[in-house]
Image (cartoon, rainbow, N blue to C red):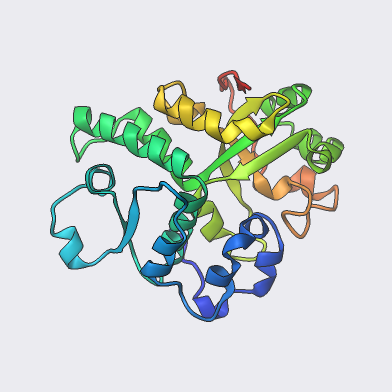
Length: 266
């Protein structure tokens, strides 16, 4: 069933005090204010050097006949629906992570050149999954990867919950659809993750963008690892109870024969 976000006036303020939305509090005035931010406000917030700009998605704009990705690549225009949660979170992702967004756009254009505008390749599906539900995970403790590989969710999120508090494991939510879904209190969130291992987690976003550009990542949707974000300490109201980590519906066993690619080493 297609997700329908709550109306702006009906959003429970409590969702903004919990991850993942708590991690985007620099945009609190846009997300929690009484009024939607204007397109001009989005453009005024662009970081220095960002070529792309937001434009209201009107019939006149769409009449240019360009594919969404082509319009970004050739014209620098990000078509954006006004007063729309999904597109507002997409704008926030562009403002925070322009290198990642630009890398995805470049790869999408390369695939469109081969596939055309109507067909989609396996890499395109992978890139779309990551754009919508992507998470960049950094593990400073490689032993945690074995738990993740085995879908040992109780081990990863309960027995090793200290790892997420202490910084031995961390995640950066990138997917704008994930952020939109977080508007519904108690919703079980599952991200599509790329894994990085190394001591300097600050390098992960830049390295991720480079690897996407170099076609080292997102070659197939199956290369993305599921990560039940609701299991992270404090991310779901029930995650502080051990029983949650035995029976949460977002915790799925690994399918027989499923293997994940090695993580990127920082």
